Length: 389
Length: 208
Image 1 (tube, rainbow over the protein chains, first blue to last red):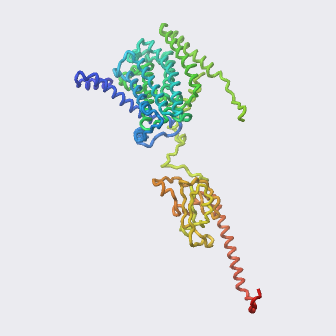
Image 2: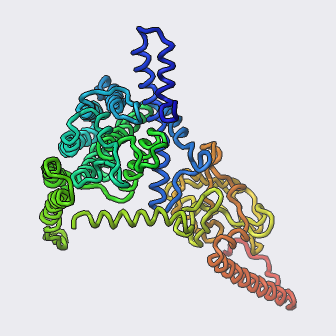
């Protein structure tokens, strides 16, 4: 028994003690408990690290009062959320208002069930894992609209409408960029996708991010993931400065905390899928590092991607609604389709430098062209006011 | 090229992130309860009453004229005039406030009381840590809490206090000179021999 398989082994031991009829149930409960425990604590750590990181980006300290270096801040936040008054507007649809946070949190945890976090460490090895992931991921849109609609507040309804428009628009490039990998591997199973990226060529691992179509796909996937998880610069549904907090506006206390949790877990889940599809899942980046346990590699990559999310949030301002839609339909979607074509070309060409050059050109040419025609051809001059001067 | 600006921005934030760990003077935050920013000389929040000397009762400049009470826009000042009098800084007997309350939860820091006071008795304080657990008793400041010495005033607003002191000293000198002149005149009058005034004869009745 190695350190790599210690959790798998422990689970087998516990399940072995149980009577035969209970074993599948106990096995499922153990997997679910592990997922909820690990990702919920990762959520707590991420909130404080995010606040500290954003603080440093803005040249300030960030939280540093609760516990050493402020690491106990999530505990204080949790207590605060729990003891706050739970307000429900009088005109609200009370049942839907109550159920919306639960409807948001349940599918994002479900999505984590198909993400392999280590060797032999996946809750369900489903044949259609990627499909399952996108199916339950789309259920969060329903929860967001339930929250916005049931609050009976114009801002929350506006926020929910924005959220729906944004999430549906960005779902298209998200799935299309993931399809390239599915096409290459020939399987929708997340475990098979990770296995397909196992080898090493020279000192580089065989991750799909190190191919032209994989790199472009990864970038597209992460941008769409950012929009899917409503993170800045795509936080229009929340838009504190315009529509106060969007569909959150009538939520307080623990329900708000659940929304917050759901948003972060959704971010982890979609980053986890990004790692599975493009960054080789739990595989080590170098051959001589394969002795390090696989789950450490997975969570290391996850934290790196989250750091990227935080970095982008600290850098970019919020998009305007028309910019958001233009970007999704005029840039992301054509790029995703072209990338799909490039992946097909990659598949049918013999390996070598020529294949690399052709595919890179296929991806990079349209990128430069689209960028020039869509974004740099605008005649931006000083605005002239006809009457207001 | 599309995305150049984003990369430039990311580099800038990364420089901020790393720089804040390296150079301390990038961080503009003041760790408040432990360290405080120095107060601006023109800072003001709530009024206080100035007294001269050591004893707040004897030295209190306020003469309970109640102008500030009448002028206060949110009506946060409450004054009760005393029955007896006490000498002011010149030595002239004046009334004093037997009650002087300011409700700091009502005060809007407009400084109008300071502008209208003819006796330089009320000034603006710079103290800002006034939070308390009792929102009714503790926020209503009475005369004892409001009275602060002239030295304190000079410490928080040095320029303004110097001007005020100069003006008061000039007034005092003027008053003293006047008193001296009056005393001299009186003394002169006393020194003069009394003019012999003929005692008028009894006025006849009926003659107005």
